[in-house]
Amino acid sequence: MALFTLVHVVISLIGIITGLVVLGGLLSGKRLDGWTGLFLLTTIVTNVTGYGFPVDRVLPSHIVGAISLVALAIACVARYRYRLAQRWRKTYVVTAVLSLYLNVFVLIVQTFQKVPALRELAPTQSEPPFGISQLIVLVMFLVLGYRAVVSFRESPAAPARQFL
Image (cartoon, rainbow, N blue to C red; front, side):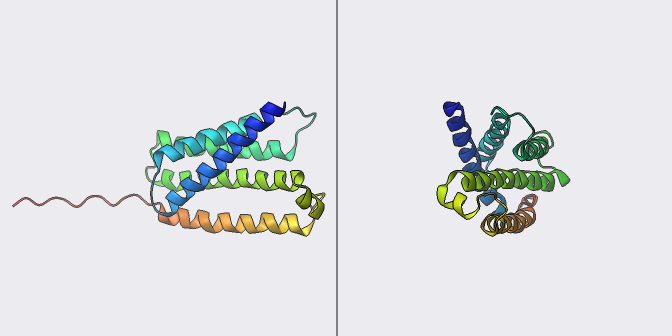
């Protein structure tokens, strides 16, 4: 199980890092196709492998994973089936950013559970340090997500060439 956990964590971190690169591309109006594919793949694998841990009941992480998988499915359809056409462009941005946010949300939860100094600050994760951390990240993603929707517009059509 330790190897499975390590693989899950590494894939999750790759998903977050590539997601931040993709978010940077969205903010600058760039598609970054290779990074996008890696982000979507690793984030899907992260969510799927999250269900591989032995538990005896449905946990909040399962619900977050299910929401993320639905968002990722929509992002993939918008990106690869509809090729970001018309409203699918905004749909892709919103669902991709939501998936990244949910991955970061879980990272914060896990960090507060696993890092002794943070666990001491918020042992039940209902204490202010945990709530403030999650609120700051949520606001950051809302602002960045909005800016990404505004910035990631279709390229204007190339001007017609004039022949003399």
